[in-house]
Length: 239
Image 1 (tube, rainbow, N blue to C red):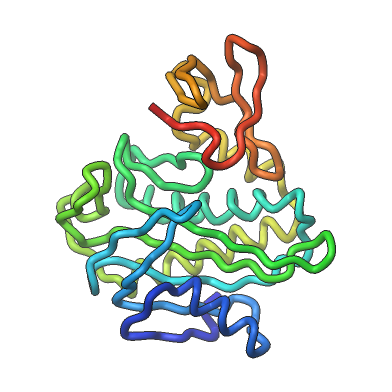
Image 2: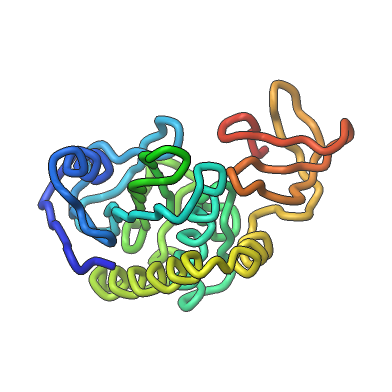
């Protein structure tokens, strides 16, 4: 991971930059595009990602997970999410992954991810994994956002955290390649925000539900008064 690294002083979106490069050249597995200033960072389903220049990590990782079928793509999401937790839990407790791939500390978001896949038949071809990790930023316009520095009261060296994160991603990716799906899924569920707890959610109407599973293709599985239900991205809101 990161053997080929492209540093940009500023760019609109590292994911957009990665996608443009894939269309023009052969990209080695594990290529990283990183910037100090991402001006139009993107999250899931068109959301934006706020990041102060030079205070956080904003980068995209390009992988070639051709061993994964399209209907198994969420296994990659689980692996990368667990790598994020591996790093953050070394500094503090209280971190969890909020489905599908936001990293929370208690009830505040510290990291977000956007994974975009290109396909070759029924298999994945390229995966562009855009990661935003709040490290030293203190002020946010979004009240539910936080940073590692705000959580611990310390300031962090971005390069050190970046190298640690790439190392953990590589380890988790190798586990995924070796088909240890059960191990990583079990860990993902164990570290999942609100897993196995009764909470209120909204999907058209407010209802009581309990998260019980996640499908290999990414659907969230809930136990509800109407029975077991599956939800895709943006079909259910956490209240």
